Length: 373
Image (cartoon, rainbow, N blue to C red):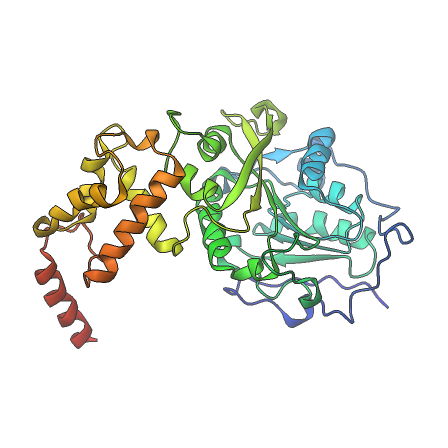
């Protein structure tokens, strides 16, 4: 069977049918008996090779920074827990330096998603060196995909079971890392996209400052909306830090490798949209008392609900946002959700509208918009 390199273009949430392996297409794997490690991977290119042979330079507009240090790339792959026979999705492989280390672990399948077509010759070189159908290349923007049909259906695990043999890994550009993790946290909460397959762990790179916000504990000055959204849905840990000088070109900041393992039960058992909106308002004035922050959730004629929020939840209203535990935030969020169910249009209220409307005014305008449609 000839080797096939599948390249798809960035159609939103649609993958080429031939990209998706079915159970009959995936060769059987018995741990300890079959090695899927390619024996003829090309050597790691030097910076001079990249420039001279492929004429590729990092693009600032795409926040590209190459990580060419083999030992660091190996450490990232080790942190991801990739083993012989796993199914792996790598985001933003670039010239393929982490990709090489993944292939050396012998994955059953390796999908790489790359937006920049300049890297295709290097990635195709690795696909040629791998086993037939072991490595597939997808061309597109990661924000356009949910990957809900990428992995074979037989790998699916129930949410309360152990993780399926699927790993997501990526050295993310800084300009996409935060919106991407929020998107994936939403999928995690909804058990949608690739999270319909089970509790798949993520191993991703972030600016060190962003990573520290993700893991920030109570009373930490870096505690933020991102801290709560990450920690209430998954166990999040910084595995190690990478000096900026290890990248080419070297960014002005250090980088952290962060691992996310989804929790069986989220710490705040409410829809993602409710939790995200509440936490966003909670940290809107991070240095002020929470009564001032949460006042922005209510129209001017319903500010009495702001006081009732603290009475029903039992949380002191003069605390600062960074002083609240996730359990305390959950208690407040549940009361707010009750208010939203009891008061039509409350959840849709936006205090940043040019004119602050009362609920009755908002509902009147909402009915007008619906009739216009």
